[in-house]
Amino acid sequence: MKRLVSLLALATATACATSVPVDNIVATPIPSAFETDPMTGEGDRADDPAIWVNPADASKSLILGTNKDEGVYVYNLDGSERQRLMVGPSNNIDLRGTLAVASNDSVNGLSWFDIDPVTLEVIHLFDTPTGKDEPYGICAGMVGGVYHAATTYKDGTVQLWAAAAHADGELAPEIVRTVKLGSKLEGCVIDDVNARLFIGEEAVGVWSVDLADTSSAPVAIDTIAAGNGLVEDVEGMSLWLGDDGAGYLVVSAQEADRFVVYDRLPPHAPRGVITITESLDGSVDTVTHTDGLDVTSAALPGFPNGVLIVQDDANPASEVDQNFKVIDWTLISAALGL
Image 1 (spheres, one colour):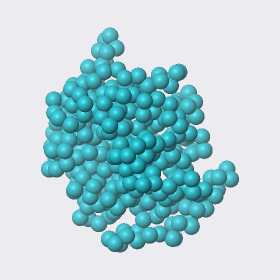
Image 2 (cartoon, helix red, strand yellow):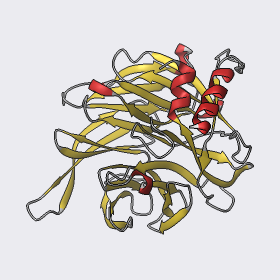
Image 3 (spheres, one colour):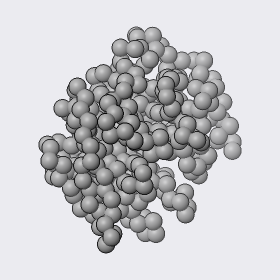
Image 4 (cartoon, one colour):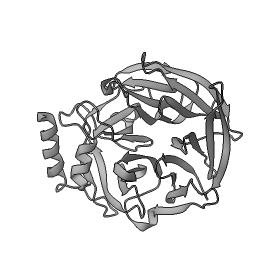
């Protein structure tokens, strides 16, 4: 409790002591809580995290993170590394339940994983070719009771996959819909309850697609030109889930080292902009140039309102020992008045 009170006090103070970048966007600094072990070495390696919250014991939850050279790393909730799955260059990862899916350049496809809730071992199940080179971003969701995965590409294509289980329990992923935008895509997130897909077009902004209407066209949520805080590249995104379909969408504005927060529900009003600074004790460095991110609203030990997890390009030097930083959602909520 003492730790939470001190962090809230800092959040209140930093809401006034804000930085103003050259484009006059006011960003509120929020301190990191802790970080994962590094992906030791030089180069742009770490990319996208996904958190699995253990329904039986939240303290035994896992963080999965992609390594663009090797595959998928798995971390304990304290940030310590516990497993590596060397499946090949993996860019993005997401999950629903115990089933995770990652984009994998080595097979030009999707790699599927199962999380054993007893042993906490992550198991590589199989790969699904996508029929297109270099699948880039990916996000998972449960829509209409069926597991879906959206895969994004640099040419502006989005493939929506459905992975329904056969009678024998085997998954049979297949493309059920294709959407086309104008330029390079990566970050995306599926809103299960509201049957909505959010997509980041890196040089343009954020779009949504109504998954309940197969004829629906992408609708612009926000653009870089609108001046709400987005900059090129628009990157990772995820949702903090509230009650009755409400909550918040968090989007990485990579080149400005900041994050824009929106209402989850239409008209998706922007609620504020944050940056991630070093931890209170100085043991965790400032976050820069974030690519992928994930959010959970589930209560975790020490984090009653969940966390934001972000990739950090520099740890602390650019493209050296990249890792993932974890931020207390309570601080974000207090700072932005959510």
